[in-house]
Amino acid sequence: MNMRDIIIAKRDKQSLTDEQIRFFISGVTDGSIPDYQISALLMAIVLNGMDEREMTTLTLEMAQSGKQMDLSYLEGIPVDKHSTGGVGDKITPVLLPLIATFGVETVKLSGRGLGFTGGTVDKFESIQGFNIEVDSKDFPELVKKTGMVISGQTPDLAPADKILYSLRDVTGTVDSIPLIASSIMSKKIAGGAKAIVLDVTCGSGAFMKDYAMAKELAEAMIRIGNLAGRRTVAVITDMDQPLGRFCGNILEMQEVLNTVTGKGEEDVIEVVTELAFHLITLAGKDAGMSSEVLREEIRQRLSDGSCFEKYKELITSQGGVLNASGSPVYVDTPFDCMHVNSPDAGYVQSVRADLIGQASVLLGAGRLSKTDPIDYGAGIGFFVKTGDRVERGDSLCALYQGAKSDLPEERLFDAMDLILEAYEIGPDKPSKKPAILGVIS
Ligand code: URA
Image (cartoon, rainbow, N blue to C red; front, side):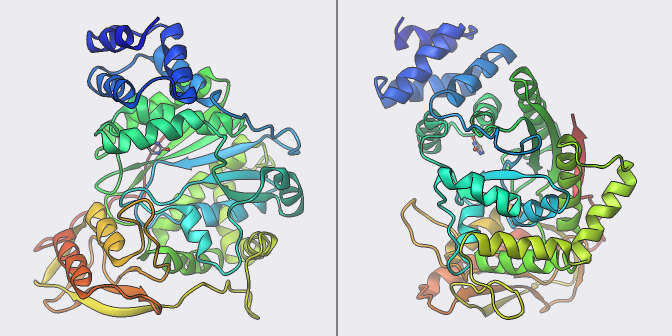
């Protein structure tokens, strides 16, 4: 068997055999296949796709390319959640303590920001003292103590995905349902979960720009999950505009605090509630409640202080510092350095999340290249979102920088230009789009 024949087979629209896929992933992992041949096959997959069997084999081979986590020390059914990425997506820091109040235990492995999308690891790092690089041998003790642990991905989890992902990023081969589905599901399967809830984002700030594409990705991941023996549910959520009121690391963690103390934005609460509902149900911790009662109970725990108590446990168990009132202490202080004003009167028709994400990266909230430092205080706060009325000159949003920032002025103006492009103002009030677009199981 050789790589040239495998590339030719996919170029000619053939299904790859399980042996060919195994040969490919083992060569990616041990470094014996050069980057140019890996990239050629990736491009052939982007162009000609993969069938269900190929996708499943690819996923399982990637999952087995490194260490498989053994979560048998958890008392219940190990569950996991994954989002396909977005702007202002602060769901995980709310969701873990929320489901922990129902006795659902989680070992959550998260990533850093990617492109214009934010990353949960960077968000937790904005809390003073918080250790996000937890040694996997400490996971059982932490879960036992609080019911949850959150950590950056360990390097030995699905290493083939890491190699493929970094090549995909620079060869125009990210946007492919078989490649995205196998990348995500390989990490979830290697992570040891028996039940998986996927937040498949859809819209301008997501990989999947429309509902049909999001549904196709969701169905592909569900098929892979089920074939691999994992009960999998996908919730398709709106990412046509940023989620919540803020994007940026400290700003989003401040919004998390609002949400766990019952003062969250409705779109964040809707997404958190739906994901929590499926995680609790799959973990068998719904205590026989009807779906209506369980959803009510989930919302109740955000407002009655129980989620806040668990959130504080999560922060302190991983070294994070709380002040006297129980709020996390952050590594910097965001300050509001400029407002972007509306050029017209009318209704906000849309707030393109991709452009907002890019503006936020320009402000320093994300990285333009892999090794760039982050300004944890940088980001954007939205005064108005889709459907809101504005008059000419009203503030659309505020740009933030950290107190320690030394951002060049032109970056601030470039960010402002992107924001003006992101906001579309028109005469008619647009109809309201729900935060949850669909559930597939
Ligand atoms: N997230 C991943 O982990 N992989 C992809 O390919 C896309 C999003």
